[in-house]
Amino acid sequence: YDSIDEAVKPIIDELEQVDMYKDGGSIMYKNNDIAILKCNTVSGNKDIYIGKSNLRYESDYCK
Image (tube, rainbow, N blue to C red):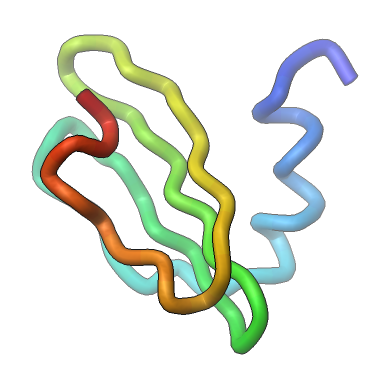
């Protein structure tokens, strides 16, 4: 893969988009087992958080 985005895309494609945040477009994807928070902020943050399905957007994420 050329980027982390390419690497996680096949996983994200299998998950449900459950929320989009008003920070520029960060998105939370989940299923019964895992969650992925893909940051996309107006300040340019492109971090990706991977966790259990109970992962929640926290104020210090995507900064």
